[in-house]
Length: 138
Image (cartoon, rainbow, N blue to C red; front, side, top):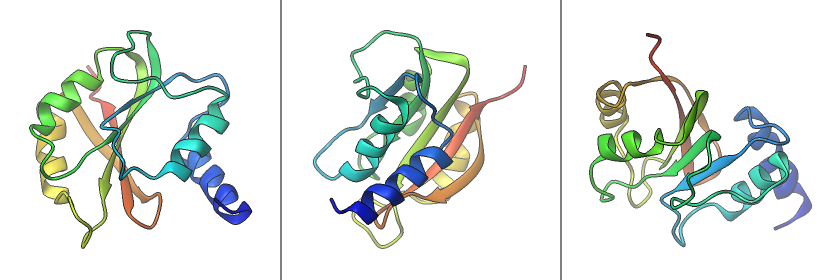
């Protein structure tokens, strides 16, 4: 990864709202993830991403989600198991035209069922978009 890619990745990691010391859990890791973005997030928070098996309380979650990955509601529920009250879920999906693209309507329909709502979406790399999901206010 070049210096420009690293700088761009760092900017994206900061835009996701992650800060030094945050614990971030990752779901859906596979060989198609954006490794530059992963590295930028790890650099931003100062530690490795936790995997799906970790049970520490986390400040944020990233989910790499593709069309054929199963039930999105179930994944969103699982992702909240260790998320602290103020934590944020970033759902990363392949951009339109890419293999595994998830229609935005699927996210909009699944999030409320899982007790979340979408607040914003951003392009995080050439192949992935991210949707910010937060818990509904009680």
